[in-house]
Length: 480
Image (cartoon, rainbow, N blue to C red; front, side):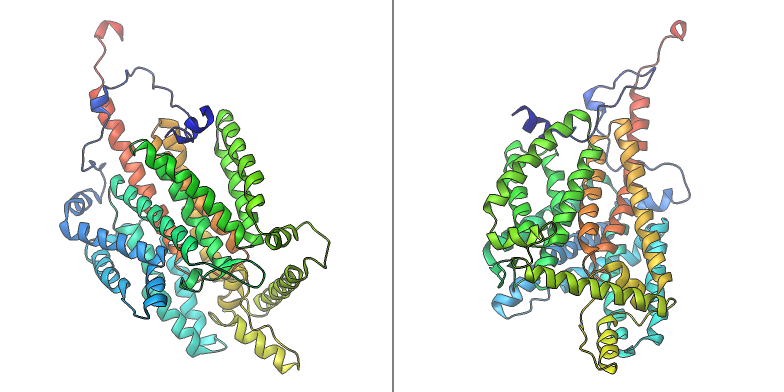
C-alpha cells in the first residue's frame, strides 16, 4: 500500500522542489493563481489577454474539445456501424472550432513555435510532390482530405487553449476518449483467425495494430487523472484496473510492435523517475508482466514470443508477416533513393510497388510500407521526412524544457502533464515505426498539444512565481 500511495500522489513523478534562498513559503491561500493568468510583457500580451476573455474563443475551444473527442473516441464509426446512420458528429464541432481558430488568433499563436512551421512545411512538400505522383488524382484526394481534416488538428489543439485550466481540459478529454476506447474494446471486439483482438465497428482502429497504437497514445492521459490529487481518490484508484485492462488489450492485439513500444514506455518511465519511484514502477511492472500473460491466449503468446523464438512451425503466420514487412521496408528504401526529392507520390507506395512488380512479371504486395518514416520518404521525398522529423523534434524539446523547469520549481501538475504527454508519444512513435500512420491526425494533434502546453505552462509558472514573490514578506533592513 505504501508503493500504491506514492504512485497515486501528484508528486509521484516530480521530486520535491527546494525552496529558493531568501524566500519564505507563501501561505496556502496565496499559492493558487488567479484566473485569468496574467501574461508577461511582450508584443502579444495585449491581444492574448483580450482573447483569453473572448467568449467566441471560449465557444470555439469547447467545440475543439468535442472535435478532439469525436476523433479519438471513434464514436462516429461505432454509431455508423451499428445503426447504419451517419450522424456527422464531426460537423457539429469541427467547423466552429476551425472558424474560431482562424478568427481569434489561434493560427498566429500556433505559428509562434517552429514545430508548427515545420509541420506546415511538411504539408507544403506533400503538395509539391503531387504533380510528380504515380497517380496524381489519388494523391490530390489525399492532400485535400489531409488539409481539411487532419492538419486542422494542429491549429485547433495548438491555438485555441490559452490557460492551464484549458490544457487540463484537453488532457481530461483525451482521458475520457481513452475510457470510451476501452469500453468499445470490451463490448464490441472480436477475434480474428489468429486469436488477435480486432474490431469491425471502430473505423481507423478496427485493425489490431492500429488499435494497439491508438491505446498506447491515449492511455497515459488516464495516468494524468490518476496523478491529479484534486480529483476524488476513489475515481483515481478505480482507473488503475482500467489501465491494466488497456495493457491487456494492447498485448491481446498480438502486435509485436506495440509490445516493443510498451517496453520502451516502461524504460522511459524508469528513466524519468526518482530512485524511490523506480521501485514502485518496478513492482507494478513485475505484477503486470506476471499476471497479464496468464490471461492471454496461447496463440497470442506464441505470436508475441516469435520475436525471440526459432520454432517456425508454431510461428509460421508471424514469420510470414515479418518477411513481408522486411520486403516492404526494402522496397520503400529503394524507392526513396530512386525518387529522393518528391517520392512516388503521396499515398502511392502500394500502387507503385504493385505496378512495378507486375511490369516485371512478378506478384506485387500492393500494401503500405508499415513504417511511417519510409512511408514519407518513399512517397513524398526526403525533404518531407526532414520537415516532419524537425517538427516532432521541436515539439519534444518544447515539452522537455517545460518539464524540466516545472520539476525544478515544484510545479507538479505541469510536470506530470509533460511526463504523460512524453509517455504517450514514446508509446505511439514506438508502435507506428511499424505502421503507415504518416497521414493520420495523431501526429499533428500531438505537435499542436506540445505547442500549447509549452507556451501556457511557461506562462503559468512565470505568473505564479511572480505571485509568490509579491506575497513573500520583505526582510527587515538590518537582516539584509
